[in-house]
Amino acid sequence: MARTRRAESGELSEADAIRLAQKGDAAAFEQLYRLHSRRVYALCLRMVGNTAEAEDLAQEAFLQLFRKIHTFRGESAFSTWLHRLSVNVVLMKLRKKTLPETSLEETTEPDEETGGPRRDIGGPDVLLTGSIDRVNLERAVEQLPPGYKTVFVLHDVQGYEHNEIAEIMGCSIGNSKSQLHKARMRLRELLQEEQRQLARDKREAARSESAGTD
Amino acid sequence: MQCQEFLKDAERWMEGERDAAASAHLDACPRCRGLITDLDAVREGARLFEAEVEPPPRLWTAVRSQLEAEGVIRPSRTWADRLADFFPLQPRPALAAAYVAVLVVAAVLVSMQGIGPLEQQLALTPSAQEAAALPAGSSLAAQQAVSSLDKRNPDVVRSYRESLRTVENVILECEMMIRKDPNDQLAREYLTGAYQQKAELISAIVERGTLGD
Image 1 (cartoon, each protein chain N blue to C red):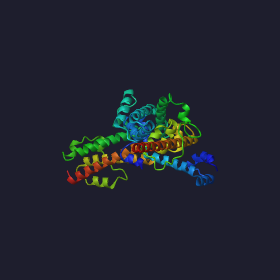
Image 2 (cartoon, rainbow over the protein chains, first blue to last red):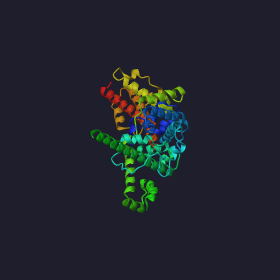
Image 3 (cartoon, each protein chain N blue to C red):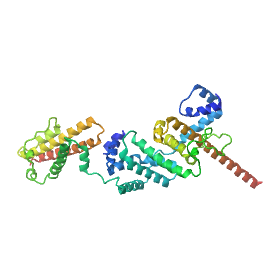
Image 4 (cartoon, chains in turn green, orange):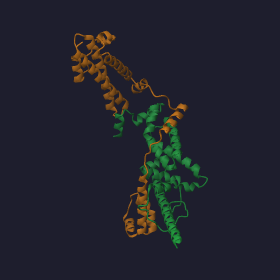
């Protein structure tokens, strides 16, 4: 369907656009950019959480892509190749940022039991149903280690399958599944902790109020 | 199954790989049920984020100017470049030339309507002076259009026939390429262009036949 629409609108197929871009054709580059920029930009935005950095990263990803486009031989899908490159650009950036504060282990392989690095999170289970909104989930995703965050964004936000993620991230399908599960477990912990904190704040406010009226 | 065991299986459960023992444990254990409900809520929550976000227009401007400065991108390709891509081998150069000729002839024919006697304005090539029959299988509209022309101007009839024959050959060639590769977008572009030229040519012929000059 999309192919027909492109044909009707006079645009080239992706294969033709790649072939012409490999010869330096400006219009072909622009078509490839238009085709993929929304997805790449969304990935960068979700990974870093702010538009200025997301723009820088998306720009870097497309620059690297177009500089190397003559080496693309079609062994994998073009979008997979582009996403692998984008993910590498983003992870490189995030690792530079997080390395001084956290170990490599925390960025890739957090604690096996909890599915996340051990922090002072605890207390009784709090059910999350109905309490997740865009803002608190965004805050929680920001706190995920880069490896977890990437798989979570690719799978649960962008809808990639584990086999595609494995290709993009250069890991096994099992690893992709395991990282996703740990990411969700960690998000659950973070969201639960936020709920507990909210409950504590409410109790505190109620106590202050009743102390004021006594 | 104990909770510890189920926790190890939770990943598989979330991936849809469910067995009877895990299912039985889940029915009996509110804590593990709560875990799965939460994980489902997290997964569903991800849908609150857009999978695609339109980047600001300046992003492409920045990418393009950087790549142009590095010489990775060169200016947009000319029509001639694209023809060269489309017709890289024999007999494609001949077809490309014919296609350009059709464009030129059609443009001249269409632009000259109503200015004066066509035969005085067209500089016909020697080949165009020879009577040229339309190719077998030419459309009825093309045949009718040519027969509608005033036979007292044989040179005009010949030149129209020549042009129609050329454009119909281009159409046949393009259709053949598309049958070989339905995804050949360039062939489709040329085919669309050739159809348009043919329509304009027939329209010019019909008008001229109707005028009878």
